[in-house]
Image 1 (cartoon, rainbow, N blue to C red):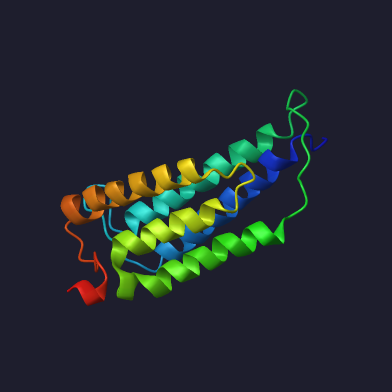
Image 2 (cartoon, rainbow, N blue to C red):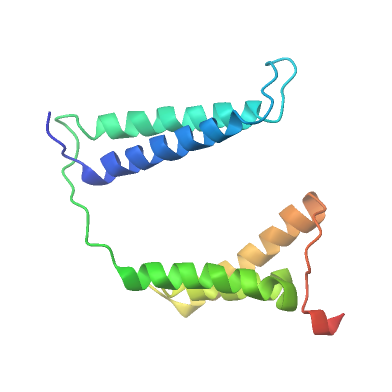
Length: 152
């Protein structure tokens, strides 16, 4: 058996590892039954489904008809930009609020793309701010600092 599609294979392995990890962690909660689900029931089965999906993806990469691909060298600059923008979001959330810190997160993490465009980054940031407002503030009623602390 020859590994033809390295991207799909290692993505599948990652999904299997994450799925099994979440399923294992979910066992520390009460499981319950299908009729009376406990807090660990849904995450356990969701993790198992993710692991199964990962196994299917990894195994299809071994097929003779699979597209042959290689994995590019890891670009640490891109990784650093993404991690730094997520850390900055966590730092800025309290003083700047959800809307501004999310906007900054999206624009800064967009710099990691090889096809960076200011128009696309700004449009994406505006869309995600509106989506988060609709989903988390209006839809779920979650309490986040929405605007900068100095605005009240």
